[in-house]
Every structure is written in C-alpha cells, then in structure tokens.
Image 1 (spheres, rainbow over the protein chains, first blue to last red):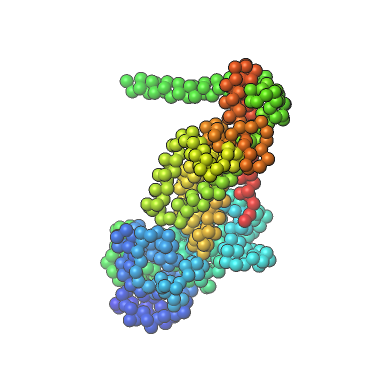
Image 2: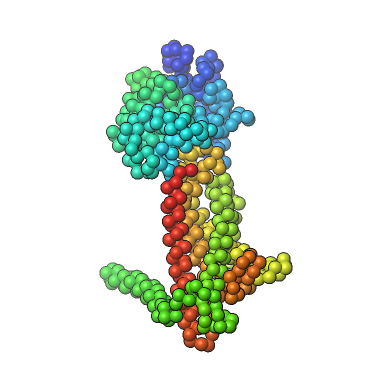
Length: 280
Length: 279
C-alpha cells in the first residue's frame, strides 16, 4: 500500500500500479497505456493468472520477472490475444489498450495485434527474402505501392542496424542470417507494421552476448516512441534496461515498482528471497 | 554373452539390408535384361499395331499418354482437395479437436483399402451415372485412390511444423488465410513429397483403371473416351503367350519407371523454383 503511493507520486502520466487498488487506478488513465482490471486466466481449469490489476506506463520499458511457470508468458499473450488460438484458455477481466477493452464484444483481433509488435523467444523469419520479411506486414495491412514499401523496409532495416550488414543481399533468404541478425530482422518486421507497443517474450534468451547487447540498445532507443513490455529471465537484463519491474509468482503480481526502488528496496519478503537467489 | 548378442543382432541387420538391396537389384536386372532389347524408339513413339493389345508391332504411346493424363488429372483433383483439408485440420481446428482426429482416422482407413475396391466402387458409380469406361472415370477413381496417401503424408509433415511460424504471422496481424499462404511456402517440400508418394501409388496401379478407364489402342481426345494405361498394357502384354510380346511388357515397365523419375525430378525442380519466388 505504501509502496504503491510512493511511486504514484512520481508523475501522473508515468504511473504504475501493481496492487489491487482499482480506485486509484481510475485516476491514472492515460490515452496510450495498457490497463488491466481483474484479469483471470484459466488453462484447462488451472488458474494461471490470478486477479491481476495493473497499469503499464507508456513510453518506457517494463520488465516482467519471476520464476519459470509463474505466468509471465501467459500474461504477455493475453495482451495481443494470442490465446484466441487455444480454446482451452479461458480469460475473464478487462484489458484496456488505448482505453478500449480488447476483450470487449466489438473488437477486431487483427487491429489489436497490429498495435502490438511481438518479439518471440527465438527468431522465426518467414520463408522468404530479407526484404520480403519486413515488407510482409505493411503489405498485408494495405500498403501496396512499391515505393512506399521499399521506403518502409529500408527505414526499419536501418533502424535496427541491419541495413548496412545486408544491403547487398536483401533479396536472399532470411534464414541465412545469423541468429542475432534474424532477431533484429524480426524486430524490424514487427516495427514495420507500426505498432504502439512492443512485447518481448525472453527476446534475447537464445542470443549471444553481443547480439543481446544490440537488442537491448534497440529497446532503450525504442522506448522514446513505444511502450515496451518485456518478459525476461535475467535479472541483470531487467536491471540494465527496465524502467519498471513487475515481479510475478504463481500467477500473482507480488511486487511492482520503478527499477531502482525495486532492486534496492524491495518491500516483500518473497521479492527479497527471489532477488537473493533463494529460488528461481 | 553381451558381445554375442551384439554380433547376432548386427548380422540380422546386415542381412535385412542385403535382402532389400538384392530384391531391388534383381527386379531392376530382370526388367532391364528382358526389356532393354525390346525397348525401341517405336515403343515410345507409335501406337500399337498388328492387332489388338497382343500385337508385336508399333509401340505403347497410347498407354504412355493415357497414364500421364490420368496421373496429372487425378493429382490436380486430389491436391485441390488435400491442401485445404490439411490446412483446415491443422490450423483452423483446435489442436485436440475430435473432428480432426476423426478425419485422420478415416484417412487411415481409406489408405488401407485395396485399389481393386476403389476400382469396383468407381465402376459401380459409373454404372449408376450411366457413364462408360473413360478417361474421366479413370481420373476420378485414381484421385480417390491417391487422395488418402497424399493427405495423410502432407498432414504428417504439416504437424511437424513448429508453432513459431503461425504465431509469428498471427502476431503480425495476418488473417488465418494470409497465414496459411505463407505456411504453404514453408511446407512446399513436404507437399512435393506427398505428391511424389501419390504419384508412386497412382501411376502404377492397374486395378483402379481396369474397369474405369478401360483400354484402347488410341490416344483419348476427350474426357469421355476410354484411355489406355501403362500398368494395364504391361498386364495384357505379359498375358500373351508370345515371348516377344512378353518382353515388350518389360520395356513398358522401364518406360513407367522413367516416367516416375521424370515426374519426381520435375516436381522437385518446380518446388525449389517456386519457393524462391516472392508472393
């Protein structure tokens, strides 16, 4: 309770809540944020996420940490409605993205997913050329003019720092890139659909340290324009790049707060145990 | 004791490999030994001459063309049905759907049905519809025969695809149909394998075409005319008491093998060419 108020004081717009305090939550609504109310997720009658209430601040990096099986990835999937593909998943509660409940009755799934750029654990290039990989998103969303597509592709390949490495082979298959390059390509592909949010599901866990560093630098650069939500296994990564931390355990949010405060002054015993490595 | 076990098992394994190789070599050797001398240019460029199918003159061009017509027609039909079905049970139905296991189960049963039953079924159907033995009847019956194997093998390959690609596409905001189009490109080698298996089963089968496509010395001009096929021409030639005609059966077998080879290679070639192209 005290902790909640403490970091609320930071600013009205960059606010952040991890506790069951819906009354305070209502004051904090901004246009461009993700707000979660009473979210419960069941997978085949197992209660995976338990009554989550949370507002994710815009234009910053929020890292979700916690031991394996605590529901981090499940939570991330609720944000872009990827659970729609699995009928055994039951979701109740509300997820407001830009003030619209994405689980409401008249929501177009495609529009919701288009707002969320997802970076998966392992890069998965589409079976086509480097160029086509980035051009794919804009094309299916209606950009047909050659010039516009070319421009978009080059712009985002440059943005992720891949253009100089691949400029003379953009028409060759994307699977020939190194795994780190592939992950940056996937990031460019995600950015090319012009999302507002970037979701990362342990996006660097399959990469070597150098590639990890490049991706992390990109995230830091991206937070000026995008709201970034990352699931990560490495506490050090969270410490390095996150502005806010959410600590989850067994489907519940245990503690949440600004990074510095979270690491230096954790409020809950469970958090302290996790940070000291007593369990993982 | 353990070493003895090891040795015995090794001998069994080597023997099995030898038996398979030996059978293959024996078949090929026999076919070529008896067929090669009879394999003249006339065989592949001329229609049969000198009486009905017992003749020594002319060639088996009627059967070559008929077989190719039938296999291409039935491949087209079964692909047209297999691809949507496999996409449906893999990507539209939920993973543990009862309906998809029902479909897979029925495909397994269909796969096990002997080809003569398909032939009889096709024949019964044609009598019911009042159609006589024709190219169309052959195409439809062979399509029924090869559909289960094409679907089942394509399905097996599709199931091996990891969830990552569909998830990546959906999270980009692709619709299911857009997703399937990209996935099909990824699955192209698998589809080609399925087609090759289907060709292998369909082109060499005599029982399905016996009643449904009939046999003729001419090349069919329309779907309503009967069509000759290589397996049947081999069958009829082997049934002849004249040794020269029998040898022509082996020559026909060589032709059949070569056709399968050509179809296989061209399928692989086109698939690699297709997958390089962009959407």
